[in-house]
Image (cartoon, rainbow, N blue to C red; front, side, top):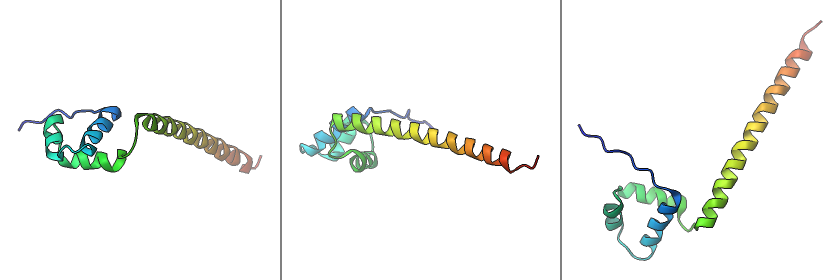
Length: 91
């Protein structure tokens, strides 16, 4: 059995493919041209449709910032838990 190597497309490339679709190219032709399935195209369309490259950069920045803030909150929750455990012990 032969396995195909999974391709990784950049978000900019995905947006360009979707723009070609918006311009009137057939989905089947785009999928053949870029070596992807119809399902992949429609998944991309659901996630990225209507976005520009600058919107994508803002989205990536916000996702990174959100990840960083969640990490900070998690660390604070661990610190609070440790302090509560320490204070609850009878000396």
